[in-house]
Image 1 (cartoon, helix red, strand yellow):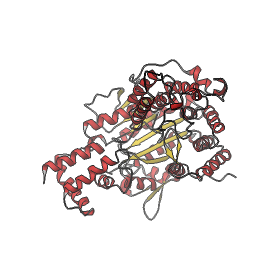
Image 2 (spheres, one colour):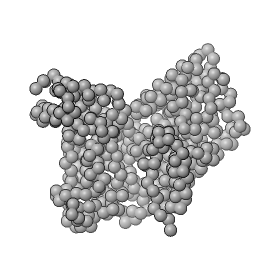
Image 3 (tube, one colour):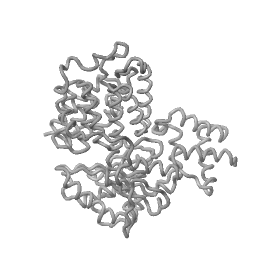
Image 4 (cartoon, helix red, strand yellow):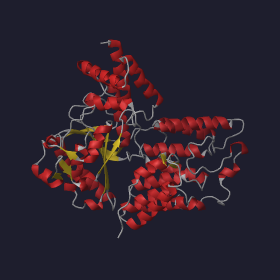
Length: 520
């Protein structure tokens, strides 16, 4: 065994996945590496290392999401997929008797349609998120009146396929009350199939906890009420653990909970997370957000103005854009004002050239795409110091704050962007997403209708409006909105960007929105 080469493999695997390889497991790791090397027809482990390193460098943002990627094949062989329903009865008792009832009571008081968001991180074959769905089914007699979101994510594509099927063997029920299995599962020739209503409560997505960005509006990974990440950190390097915990903190709702397995996080400084010790288990609750940027004025009054933006400025035929110097004047970009090669930012002659503003904007956009939200805010604030009328600067800050869960500051900067350009769509879209997350459906619908008025070809606005109507059980209206969106999508290439905030393509949209049920 080439010790130096094996050490390079260990470091590369840790950097890309967070996984910690113990010395006792080196022999097993080498066997798996040799197996993958032979599958590829390579002559040496050094050649295989070069393949993995090249893939990780060339595709740093999405290197593992492609099932055909060699990294994915290796990960599938390295990850532990052991799980079963209601694993650790003490922790599930804590959830059933204390944590979930507390969240339920709080949510009932906050909205007519209470919203509860739960994330099962590293969910393996799905037993954990399905167990949570069953718990909520038992705890909520008025479940149809709730907006429940349960997301299960994992790094192993193969195991996610099994989770979506919802088929399990007897071994997955080794700590389950037989009555629970009888009530929520049906025996068939293959195994036990979970009840359709429970399966539909859970959504599964691929996610690498170490390299992927979250909070994420696209995945709905923001303002989460409860995160379960159990029996995961024992396989991670300490640096990866701290990195993931930081992202968990930003993803949690204020007062939200994080549950790990017993003794997984005993020696770490859990900044922003308060440890609560119960007889059954410890659990962590998010405290106040650490300050990451200067405070901004209270925006509640300003936020109200965005509902009638046409009255905020003079004539709608003369937006601020028309007053820009000819050298950087641009046409409105209805797909994305954040990725244009030109900047719609005013500048002060003698202080900074237009190309410098463009460069700074591209740098800030790159930080945003990497998930470096505090750094994005700092970079965009620097742009605004130089060019106070830079629309993109306000949008970048707003999106960064939204991803950090600070909706008050995100709203403030959206309003500032709208004041600069009363015809701009992007700030309205972000405001609509924020309103939806906060349960303010009337405001969300109002903003989405404004977007459609300003740009009747805005596919994402029709789809978002369809989703809102679906939540309100107005299926006829939802069907109409979605049909219009699908007609528009049919005219676009699959790679066309149609969501300016989440950067979703036409192809992504078609996959994301399933057909609606037939309306009688």
